Every structure is written in structure tokens, then in C-alpha cells.
Length: 85
Image 1 (cartoon, rainbow, N blue to C red):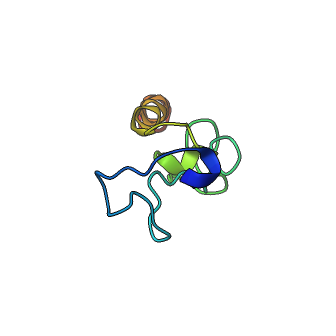
Image 2 (tube, rainbow, N blue to C red):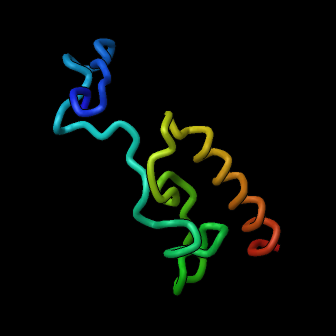
């Protein structure tokens, strides 16, 4: 990955920084607005919600924790307001 993109290995984590058995920030799988509505409600299932990195369709370019947090807050506000009155 580094050779193809001109990067350098991160020596702080794991021996060479990369390995075939490591996925640093897995995202996707239950895409917001496709497998769910725009608030993480899984289509076709009552009371099943997704509010994690699986809602994001691809890489965010950096550690995605703030993006995931913002999406979760967006979803939970709507769900609490409208599904649990």
C-alpha cells in the first residue's frame, strides 16, 4: 500500500505498520439511505437500528470516529423523537 501510494509505514503500530490481517477503519456494509432509511432504521424490520461505521459507504480519509459519532447523533435524535414517544 505504501509503495503504490508513496507513503511510509507507521512504525508506532504493529511491526511494519501494515499487514494482510489488519483493517484499520472498516466501514460500510449497511449503507445509510440504501439498507436503512436516512436515520439508520433497517428497511423491512421494525425496531432494528444501525448507528455505527457500517452506515458510511467508503473511506473518510482519516480516522472516522467523529464522522461516526455525528451520524449516530443524527440518527438517535430522530429515533428517540419519533419512535419512542
